[in-house]
Length: 440
Image (tube, rainbow, N blue to C red; front, side):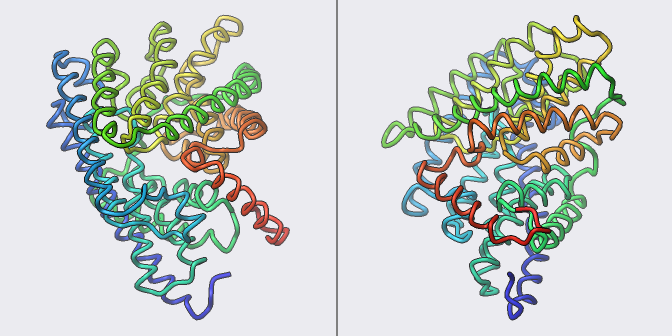
């Protein structure tokens, strides 16, 4: 329980974390747009549109430049703190939320720059890191206990996602279900306040609109039957995806290869992106096209393999970045592919609805956070509840299959095996201590 003697300082830190994270998320989003506009032209919002019209040489120059930045940035970041740095998940579970501030913020800035240049990673990692660092710093100033610090850092990271995407409820649930590992009642209010404040502040600088725009999809018996059959398939694919992320994270280059590997990997991505510009960036544009059914079948089949391969390639080269939007994009592509034969067998379901259900299922299975994933997808898309039953069925079956085979999430995949085991034991111990009316 939170210490009563620290309650005032804790709540002040909660509000200040929300304010600072909202400003940081807005600044990082603007930085992404500026970099994207400088490198690819256009408005700086839609990388696919401008990259599709760019000369092949621009693809190569942009991604080789991103590779050089990663190599140089990794060398610089290693000088800012000793060791290999600390992942947010690892920090919350094993160091009570303590993070090396300069190195974490440096990695966040670098990830935004290279995603703007075309690296196939997510941009949400940067605002999450900024929110976590701010929460850790305020915890020092307020002299919070380790338990308060751990919670505040999780709330700060969730608020970063909330502010960047305009998803206050989803960000709060993500902080608790995925990062903190417990949907305990005593944690809910701090997470909600932090995310609400951060989102409200970010709306002073960023547009208040859904990230994705959808038609008015309706549920049907056909879509419900598809969800029951496709959910387990998505769960199996998520297991392969998580294990690929774990493999890539465990085989990151060391020594002088830290400079050469990202140049080679991102240069290869630049070459492949000439015929497939959909591989560039975090995957938001590809997911949008899938959600409205505007990707042809041959392209869907190609991208469902190439898109996750590009993400794993970037991650394995040592490039920093998030996995949230790439995972959502993979789910949208997979849902679209699985919908192709179903549309022939049982016509009537819009292709975009297959993609939407696949995205929610993949996100839930790969993050091991079904509740936060459903809410995030609804907030990101402004999704109507009329088709929520098949969506929930796809999420539930995918998560059940994935969790039965692979207990790790994409965020656990960045931990060592010993850390994963320790986290599982800690979560089981916490669940035993939580009263019956609290979900852990």
